Figure 1 (cartoon, rainbow over the protein chains, first blue to last red):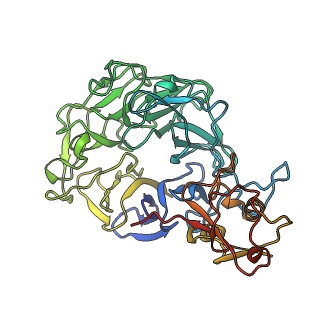
Figure 2: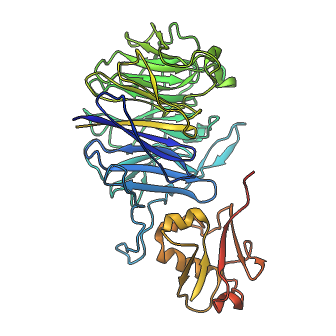
Figure 3: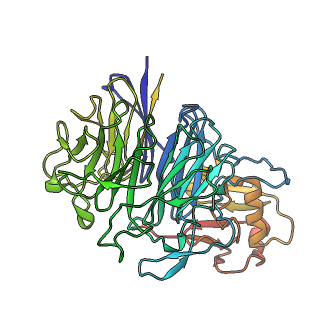
Length: 386
Length: 98
């Protein structure tokens, strides 16, 4: 019997929620890594039992955890008393060192500051190899491991794409989105707050900004600048890797040429602001966002938690409210906390800063809470299991 | 043997109890003890001090012999009470809660 495994990262640990294809009854496992911030955990498409987790806190920094049994047990890759080729202990699964001269980026006030590693925001396993995984980090850079997370190497060509003009968003200067093109293994998209979207067509060696058409009139002196846009998240349907959807600080955008150009599709959304965006598993023109009331308040408009769905690839949106709180709700939904499964009736999931994880087993028409009282949810990923 | 007391989260990470015991060659210094901790428990690399610079992380402190050794250089000898195993060298998460 098929089912789903929902991977939830929170401020105080990781939780794994499992159910069958009905998605009515749930088993909750956790907290894993209790007391630590889990920015993200994610599973390998090539081996669903291979999971990776980003564990961090202010005292002890970054830890990478790996599971080979679907999250029942975990290990720090290379963390045992083993030695590398040089005879020295490995223990480098949490060693994220920028390549070459560290360089500087723009600070909030326009001055330059040196790059400083803070944490891993996102882990993106390869589509084909369980031991290859990408990490998006703060201060923004992209790292790759080809040994199951035991060691990491930066892809420095990304920061060469005008990195000196990137600046932190309110959450930090984070690389928060990585999209791997299923049709072209050399093509990767990333998004960074507040720098914009970037693309490589040569497997990560060279990168270029793909922000033409984005407009940020309040945050940039040049509203059409090449870099500096506060992109909150990107989404792609695997059957159409040239079509990208973007939730930006100021609006929702769409590209049909792999990011070469963008146009706004906010349409009738009640606010332009929000964090996550997702695409329906079987309908490439059906997309989801969670509008939030402005960058100054960060909660749903009118205290009503509403997911918005467009079945036309943007511009025309409908509010999805059935089963969601429609008064006195002041939670937020963060950028990595919205995901879909690939069951026949597409499931949609999101987590809130109030500790709820909601599921819809009918493409968003109706919702129910799987859990109500977790720590603030930072990320939600879903694995569809055979 | 040198006794080292670790904070709660690092104990869990290394799968050890409140204290670990390590053989450390003389001279017994702050740096030598931390090297021994990291050699024995590689998963703790980067959690107490930086991988590359070996600078102590901001929210970590080192106590021994009733003294705060957090700001002493790595070649600082540890007190006789630690060398003799009478008390642990204490790695402490700085008080930074509410």
